[in-house]
Image (tube, rainbow, N blue to C red; front, side, top):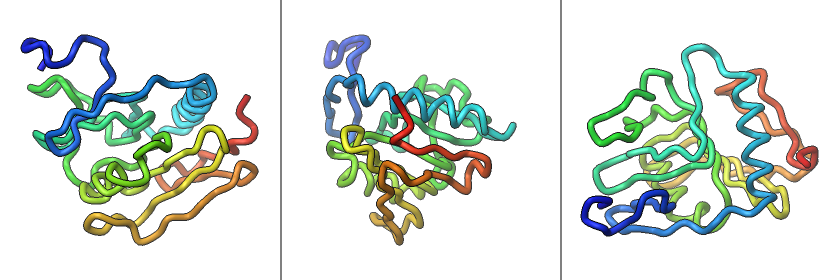
Length: 167
């Protein structure tokens, strides 16, 4: 797509089942939350996991998503033929993303690929929607966590953060 001039270097896009979706710019609150979550995740990562911030994840030939943060097995973070980290179903431990369309189609795609846990975060309200139990195109559980509630994840047993404590 770069060589054909369809997209340009550095342009923020996702490929959603063959459709190119231009991603909006990120605001300051969004960046502060993403940075704080990334630091907290890195501090608690076990050796067999790694993280990618704004990393393009290739789920299929027609679906490439860019979560703000993803936690997955270290051996997946090797350069593939396509140049993207490729995920087999069920390999992602945690994906954190911002609100926009992420609670709809994007959440269904993560469930379909059996991502174990998805956090969709409303950066302005500092509310997290924690999705677990992927099944088909849905989730068996979606819990809302308020700004003063501690976010934890089974993927990172020593991880804990409150969104209202992020500057």
